Length: 368
Image (cartoon, rainbow, N blue to C red; front, top):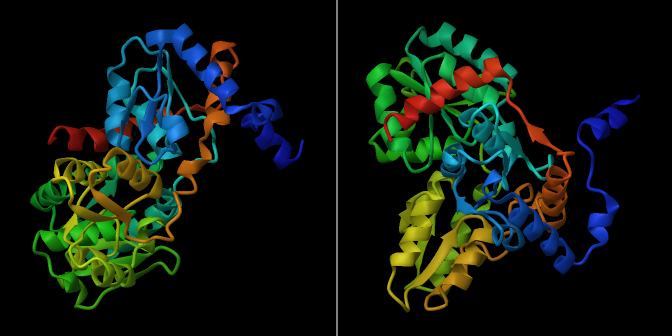
């Protein structure tokens, strides 16, 4: 058996018959299985998912919220996570051993999470320890693999979200003189800057060149940023901001802190996905907004708030390609496979990895 056949056996592809069904037929399958399984099934949906998936979600939110909610569904035997791979991993880490987490399409990954693998991270840590000795505490954005969460947990660090990154960085500086922030340099830079740390005291670790890029003498470095980014949010540019300012002088610009420092600095507001949603929800009718985040969410916000003038900060922005992997055919296939006793795409984190990853998550949740 060749490599392709092995992969196909381990993670079967969507059967043709689901691709040939109408949307009504697929919706009927999803609803039937949900009705049959009731509370034995929990279907969390991330904010960036397509509407055709979100309409069936039992809860929608950011990745950590959904993983936490999954852990509270005590009657749920199956958790079908409509998001990306690292989110399903987190749900598996936080749920009981007798609960099973599934991802409708195994191709639903995250380019940011993939920018920091465990081999690169361990090499970086050894070199940074040789330079800085035991003065660094690692933090990782929850948008990271279970292996990276485990590494951070093993070394006394914690996970962070875009909502609590500031508090977690403050906590980290109470423990050590410096931090290593994985894998998104922009969230780390924007948060540290807001906390009063000068940009020149932030260095960037390049995992490809295995090199620390810094402007000041190395002993003055306080924040080490992993050279990673969100492929969606990095596509919002200062030119987009300038265009909105020219075309809509009275429009508020609100962006996610995964955007670059330059874009955040020129915007009116920056905050997590929930911050953006709530800011728009609480805004007065007739207000105008340009939103810098994932397009599925922006389009949903536009539909839910017709009383406001809302546009994407980048009119040429596409939805997150990996989030878009999960669609109605994959969801129907996943649910029907579970109902038929032949579940596909089980997400199971190695026990040894999960133990240390949970330490990183728990250190954050204790401060929530």
